[in-house]
Length: 328
Figure 1: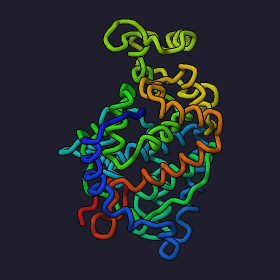
Figure 2: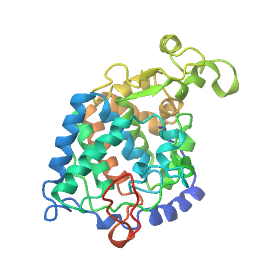
Figure 3: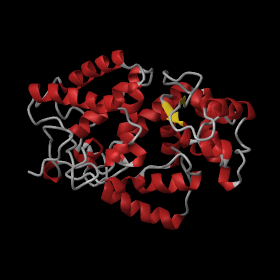
């Protein structure tokens, strides 16, 4: 994920879009389930702990799930819906094909326990938000309270994943997209820090190694030593190898991602583009030097992102099975 910059004309349009996208955000609140399902967040954490024991890196997918859900039609759990004979759902669109089945199975396990404890009460959208927060904390990030009360959506369409920022985006493209979701450039820089955990498949950055901007050469801004390492791991045509996005500490939520970006070792074009303006590069440098600042501002931006396009009240539903849409 990367961020970008835009001008006043598209910014005005973005304000209108944001008002539409986040119209019901004020209706979600911290402690929404304190009466109706008081153990909800405890149940989510208990099931996540089981998932971490089975797969130490799965938390990166739970975090990415929240991003990919919120950026496509809002935070309404459309990413969890299975495709049907008549519809290809978001989870089967190209940007989401690298999710492990385990992450969806993990959501199913959480939902099953919540249904047993509090039938048709806790939404799948809120489960995603809680799981993302708990994953961040598991790897060493800052705990933050998650406003809840989201409802689940009634559609999931693969072609709508065009709203997901590809790793090839430059700063301008990223900024424009983030503003359209009600997020600013500081949110962009902070949320890019999610790349401090997790892996990427070779095709996500192969252009930087072999055909940058159609030149049939590598990206000259990429550190030469890092480029050689990546070429060894990802020879031309390799589509299956996974590479740590933050090689120094792939299972620790810290600021080493930003340190890498300052030394031209950002894995994606979008990562390295954070250094293309004074404003964003200065924020990157701050985070590189001050991990506590990064963790604090990342948490604040996560809360903000979690309010994109939420459904509340009769706008949505609470699915009994996160994979299947309720039309009632």
